[in-house]
Length: 345
Image (tube, rainbow, N blue to C red; front, top):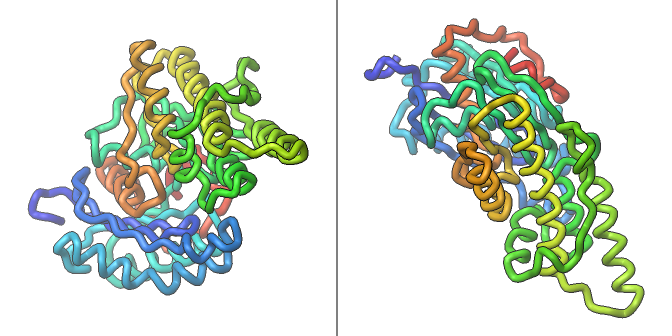
């Protein structure tokens, strides 16, 4: 145990294409080191699972060593190991889970297999302090678009709604491709949209008034592709910035509308936004505008903590230790379809 009496937790994240290792002491961030294989996937226009798994294998030990060096610690200073057990790419998860088991066994410290989505909620504490109880969390990434009620991130997470087809981040990637923008699409659309008009085209808002807290972005993605095809067939140039801004506005309009509906419906005054798409500048701005109007307090981690990282896994692991939750077995599997209601395994 550290000198402060708070555990030093090593967190390992390998759910997709980034090998993330974070170290926390309680809710104090000591290191957050990431090795990304994004460039290796860019030429394919998306993440290739086999490539990601191999990259995790090669990056794991150097990334752990880099995080320890950044924190000024030795491996023997670690009191617990946390790892993303799911959801995510099966092969990628296996690398992280196997490594975490080895570190925990070798050090003789407890192991905590945690949920990737719950970790995106827990990471905000490293920047803004303990989470309000309860809070509504909007998680938006390449694989997930979810609304959650979070009475206690270490023990109780309730699903309120999710995407019925494409996740928001997935739609960003696909629209970026038809606009000729690089992968991953989110940052490039965000950048292009700053020079465009969000009202240039009124693209459809899926499930906007259906009374649920679910999302749908497949129809929007298709509508953008068809609009571009029609423009090109007519021999007219495609105004990339305007289309990017109009598409982005449709996405963030739905996301923020449903999130505020969840807060109102459940009488919750705090909204947290996490996941890779939470780094989007327009989502952050519109969420703040609508939260201010509704009297809801908004919490969004800085962009570097929104994308997949080891710090978020370590943060949730620290919460589990503090809550007295029993450690995971060294027999835990990697679960690519782990439900959000399972905070840990």
